[in-house]
Image (cartoon, rainbow, N blue to C red; front, side, top):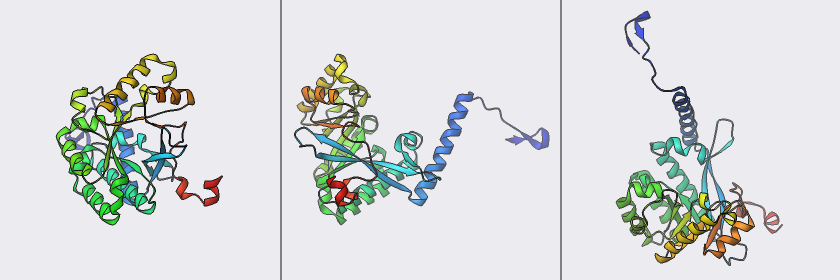
Length: 278
């Protein structure tokens, strides 16, 4: 508002559409929830198993997915807030909290191997690097069991920074996974410079793949590309046995999805021994 008019104030017109105004209002609400959760450290990880071919029904590793608690104590998944905060400092603080909880889980569970999501923007965030270094000092063996996941979009936004960071961390034993592989349809030649340890094929190519010859061809091509550069493949969003069988036939090495297990905040190592054996 500026001086003038009734009571000395003039309300500036809002040229945004009603939809844009509603989205902005929703984003402000999300930001408020995120800020309160971060200040209170009201967060947890949900763990989802990732199965390997020939693993005998036991997870090869897990993905730790950040969850925040709202004012009513409800568990809010990342898809509900990351879009609003990804490019803000709150996004960096979420990455710090996720990494801190992941490293703590690795320290407490010596047999656990786990992937933790991060944004390429967090590489240059001093607090995130301090969390990583402190965690590795506290539990030196964690580096061999830690996998850092970066989305294709995030990696391509800062390719030089990501490449240097990956090279340094891989020398210490940390692995890297490229999340949502194929979603951005990035040029394969450009993508090959990163040399990720894992590539996670985006769920849009996986769901219903048993009935979709085009997606079968895409998955086969992505798997061949990954093998050419010594990268293991993970299929996301595997939801039934038929899709899992087709993925195995086209050469996918690891699978993740509700067919194998939903993300849970009470993973097997948090349950009583009798429940684990049931």
